[in-house]
Amino acid sequence: MTDHSGGKLTGADIRARLNHPVVDSDGHMMETSFAVLDFVKQVGGADIAERYEGYMKANSAGNSRRAVWVGNSGPGSIDRATAMLPGLFRSRLESAGIDFGIVYGTHALSVMQIGDDEFRPVVYRAMNMLYADMFRDVQDRLTPVAVIPMHTPEEALAELDFAVGELGHKAIVMNTMIYRPAPEVVAGAPDYARYTLAPTSPAIDVGDRYDPVWAKCVELGVAPSCHNSFRGRGSTHASPVNYVFNSLGSFGQGSEFFCRALFMGGVPHRFPTLKFAFLEGGAGWAAQLYNTLFEYWEKRNLEALRVNLDPAKLNVDLLVEMFGKWGNDYLTPDRIRAEPHQSSNSVLLVPPEEVDDFAGTGVTKPEHIRDIFARNFYFGSEADDSMTAVAFDPRLNRYGLKLNAILGSDIGHWDVPDMTRVMVEAYEMVEHGLITEDDFRDFTFGNVVRMHAGMNPDFFKGTAVEADVEAYKAELASV
Image (cartoon, rainbow, N blue to C red):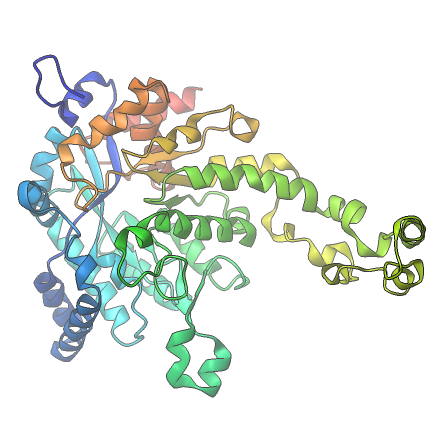
């Protein structure tokens, strides 16, 4: 896209066309290793800092071919510096066409994968202290995101109290895909346990163990966000040499995993005011999950199980009759009468209530699925992802729902070679007729405001967009 003078449009040009601010739900900083180690040493001492430095070097050596290409170099070096320096980041927001940005760590994504129980809590705390210090003087335009460990509820609760309660962070990211070894291997061959790691979620198959964490998020007014990708050993994104193969769709799979776990684990039912963000994976997977849930509900709700799928109601006489008419020398009436529950996956003779997978979701009618997605879930989508349009297409989504897509610029990473072009790419959906101007307002402003201000009415207080947010909240209240 070019302007009338033949030069490239920038985000500032797009922003000038809009009658609303732009809030970026997912920009990125690039932490310097030396600063991270400074704070790790401050929190945990020299020995822990030395151990963590060795850990970082070992991980870097194992991923050097790919990791070296994260961030911007050459002509984009100014963007690389921008991601490292919050003051510079703030000074360049206007040229990017962004009024306010929520900034996630890059090193934080690897911190969330630390399995060492001794230095993991130290590193989390050090990172959150670093972020609070780095962004102290730019809070009017940028706010950093605290990193919350989820390996145990107790660890999460302690860091929530510290990061939000003491440091004053307003946004959080959680490790929502926790890799745990097979317990049988841990017991019988612990030296090999690390080769059996598999992803687990704090949102399903754990009963109410993490409910105190979700309750604490409600109390503190923070929306848990997911920034997990499904990559590495044991995943479908595990090439040892091909980064693109591993990256494609990995954040979408990580987000879908957590969203599906939350829904089927009943977390939004138990905590109806708690809002969740699923970042960097787009909205295409969200539309598919949303619409597919209705198909499963229609066929596997409790009443449907009773009527159509209960093995106890199998008409054995009809089977015998059909085998007599259409069988052969091995598909005989006598054989099917003796073993009517064929194939082997239909032999579970239990009350339908015992296999009702929707029992814990709180869903008793299809409208409840719609309500959860409308009320609780927000989907971070990058500017160049045209599939975001499906979130806003009422023809595609049951009940005409427009899913809560939110702009995540990903500024600071390799896929944004020029931060001043993010808004240009995002606005192309309007120019190509894929979404409306009103949709674009929701995408770049309204939805992210409803998410964060819905959890914490003062989230935007003291920021450059405070007045616009208050006007928007008044507009919503009047509808």
